[in-house]
Amino acid sequence: MWEAQPGQLAFADLGYDEMIYVLEGNMTFVNRDGNAQIYGAGKAVVLPSGWSGTGVVSTNGARVLLFWYRHAN
Image (cartoon, rainbow, N blue to C red):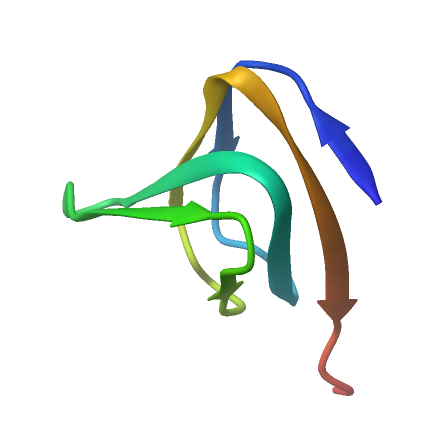
């Protein structure tokens, strides 16, 4: 579990799949093309390996569960 403080997180060519399940608060993910999606409590997002963009944590912060999966070579 991660308690995210308000602000932005940059993602550049993730080397793994990441799933984020929002428990409280909300997060917005903006891909490199500028498309934004908001995820609130009870929603999950999967960022696939190679994904680039920005994650924005709401002004009240967020509590999330994180899961990672690295593909075998």
